[in-house]
Image 1 (cartoon, rainbow, N blue to C red):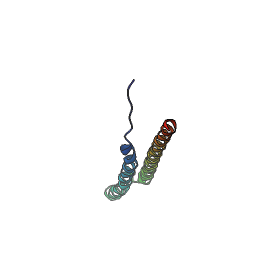
Image 2 (cartoon, one colour):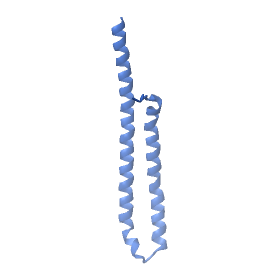
Image 3 (cartoon, rainbow, N blue to C red):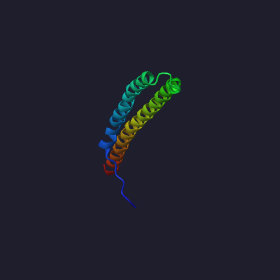
Image 4 (cartoon, rainbow, N blue to C red):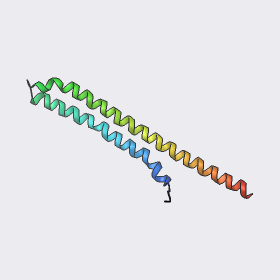
Length: 100
């Protein structure tokens, strides 16, 4: 049987990392908008231009979904760390009660 240990500091850092990744993903929207604008002016009369709004909408939906999932993951890391603290405190209290 393998020993499993939890590094509480690592768990506590994960929500911040999720926020950083979500911010990086959100920042991609402006890059996508710039690319869309450049394509619109570069490909005038090209059939692809009609699909650009739909492609942009799909990119925004994907961006929103990824950020939402990262936020959810960050919340779960917070909950996990809080439960770890609570369980550790309960175990210590139980041992104190048994030994006193």
